[in-house]
Amino acid sequence: MVVRHGIAALLALGITFGLFYLMQYLISMGSERGADIRKGQVIEFVRLKRDSATQTRKRELPKKEQPPEPPPPPKLQMSKTDAPDPNAMAIAAPDLSAGPDLGSGPSLGAPSDSDSVPLVRVPPQYPIRAAERGIEGWVVLRFTITATGTVENPEVIDAKPKRIFDRAAIRALKKWKYRPRIVDGQSIARTEEVKLSFDLDDI
Image 1 (tube, rainbow, N blue to C red):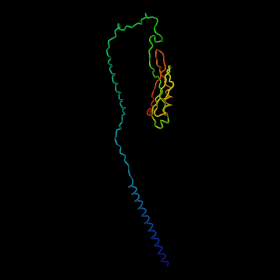
Image 2 (image 1 turned 180 degrees about the vertical axis):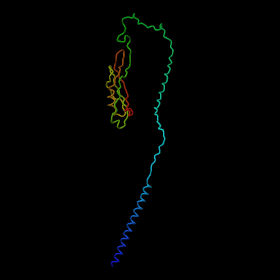
Image 3 (image 1 turned 60 degrees about the horizontal axis):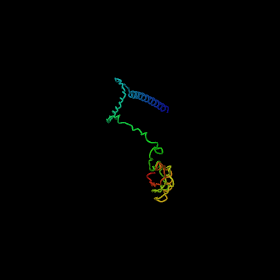
Image 4 (image 1 turned 45 degrees about the horizontal axis):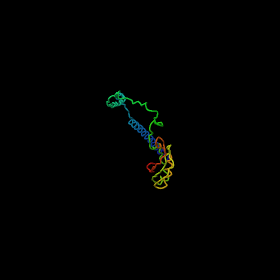
């Protein structure tokens, strides 16, 4: 029994030492291999110097375009006219030998007649309802021009359509002003007629 135990102990020691030796061998082999691997992974960077001359860019300002010369002014052709004859510019002097009767009134002569002339014409205002419905028409009025040029007694003679534009026409006609008719140097009243049209295009 003792002999068996001794042999077993010797075998165990031999196996243990053998395992330690194998482990030491493997460790040494791994370290050498790792060193080789680490050596192989070294990468060296070499920076090459290039001989290059630095180029300086010069900025040039854009040339300003000169404005075009203005065209020459057109030549004016003056018509040649003969100088007036100084002897032909005789001013007719009034005849002072006339008698004291020079006519009555500021005209110092025979009074001139003239017809009535419109001075101010106010256009009529288009009725709102007629404009909304698209209604157009006209009105004929008779009125009196007084001696002072104002309008009196306007009345509707005819209209189309009836009673749509009458009030607007009369209201506008009352604002008109005239230069009255002159007969024998005096202004007189007279009666006239006028037609006022109401068109949607004039609004």
